[in-house]
Length: 141
Image: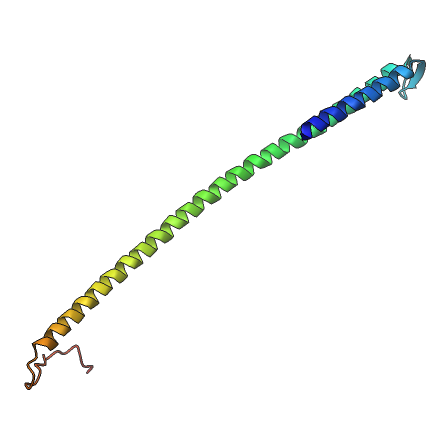
């Protein structure tokens, strides 16, 4: 829709310029500073309009190329950031998975120790003193 309005406005401007040029068809002198020529005003108006359009085209084309170059650079930068982010995510995931596995192993070891301790306490006969193992690592020296 936006481009349709541009085309319509462009056609209207060209129509206004052509009508203005046709209405002014007399011969006029043009002074370039170093020389002077006589030409129909219609050619001067249309030539000035074409020269202006050419200047606008050149300026907009260079701006468009700069914007495309910037867009390409930004897309590459975005892809690099996404890849870097994915790598960091995988590294962090691996670290967390290792921690989780270590904690599960610790939990299983503690559950085994608790089961062994419960088995020892269940083996104690009521009325008899419990059997205490002589362990050096339980008491600090």
